[in-house]
Amino acid sequence: MNGFTYTLILEEPVLANSLSGDTNSARSLPFIPGGLVRGAMINKYNGKKEADDKDFQRLFLDGTTRFLHAYPVCNDQRMLPTPVAWKTYKDDFGGTRGVENFAAKIIDDPELKHTDFPFYIIDDDTIFKARHEWQVNVHTQRDAVYGRAKGAGKGAVYRYEALPAGLHLSGVILADDEADAKELKDLLNDPIMLGKARTAGYGRVRVETSEIFSDWREDTSSDLPTGKTNKFTITFLSDAVLRDANGQVTLDPIPALQAIFKVNDLKGKHTFHKMETVGGFNRKWGMPLPQSQALAAGSVIVIESASGIEAKALEQLENSGLGERTAEGFGRVAVSVSSKKDFKLGTGKLKFETKIKASLLPAEEPVADLMLKRLLRRELDEKMLSAVIVAVNEYKGGVKNSQLSRWRVNLRSAIGAPEKGLDKMREFYKKEDARNSPSWQKMTRARVKIGNAPVRLTEWMDTLLKDPAGVWSMIGYAQAPEKKLGTRPFNAKNMNVEYSLRLMDAVMASMSKKNAEGGQDGN
Image 1 (tube, rainbow, N blue to C red):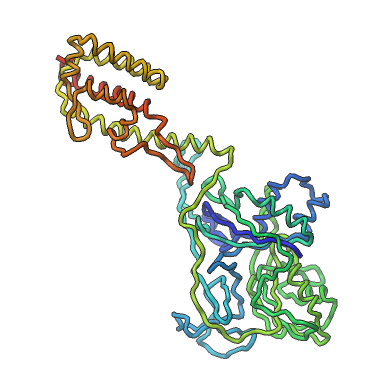
Image 2 (cartoon, rainbow, N blue to C red):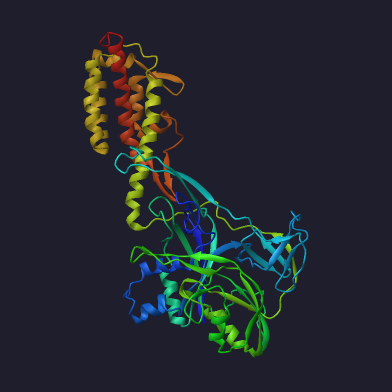
């Protein structure tokens, strides 16, 4: 057996949708199924994607390669589903009384109840649980054309409960052949998209992979036998789709185990199980998979066999899994020959990244830059309008509208080609200053308020034309502002000249408007 572990770091919330819940909402599973990861890798696979292709079958379909579920990471360990055989005390809010394992010893105590934590990690004799996190977003149905709710039946409110951005989850990919493991590891590199609503801000995941290993056990706290054993415990680490001898779906694993071990004397001494309904979605066909009953993850069965089962057969069972859809991570089991009766209970902490380093695909970068540019322009325009109101608030007239219009015609022409336009405006300013006409003298006497102090209109224009970067301090920034999408920035420093010219134009337009409101033409 060869394989590697992978860590999924959610850069966006992920909806690994379950079949339960309100039909008007979507609630994610508390983990990411191996089938989702397998589907993302099939999309990136460059080989022949046909069900009858031997390479494709081996890598993705027939169970030779197994994509195990990605469970949350707690205390830097991959968590596992909590066994149904574990029970805690009703009044033990602090966890001081620990956990009782009914697979080792059944206790008749009415104060015991089923555990309320879905996943755990174990360290010696202490079980650590972690409170699961959800990201809840409320959405409203809208019309695709109008961009809002319109018409009867529109505007319905629905809710998404997703795995939160920043959460770390760990999964495993197992392959019988080392070359297959290496090929799949190379596929699982760039960011991938998982789950539903991927065009609505959900599903982007960053992946980190380990080195290839050849010896690995999913549950290291359990003890495999060293020889033939007559009694052992099987704990299901994922849902299992099982069938009996007649091909009917069953929750009893004994028929499937007897077929694997080729014995007829297996008996379940104690069984602790739950039922789950499982389904799925095939992206290739664009259709949902058939729903089926399954033995839920965490189910436990204590098995006895008079003839005994060899240790090698039990080890092979752990490696290959049990039942159907093992390629998607179903049917994972842990085998143990001894079970501890009780455990201490502790609280662990799920691993989160508080600052998500979102990465973009090359094709997405131009779109991201366009979005950031538009957002930044909207913010800059609002700031500029506020600065213009303050600048001309105390202007009482004095500059003719004809003179202001003359300047604005040149400014608006320069804005169309800012770099060349800046040189033209500098030359135009020098000529006007050298002529020193009566109209220019009126502009020299006019005042605008920049910051907290009034300044001559011509001096202010001269300052902007000589140093366009000064526009940012004039509209309320310490330096050129920027917007970010993840770690991708878009800075306004390349817009210095444009906004300097636009600010001068806006100030003069506002001065003209005040002249008109005062019933004068600058006189």
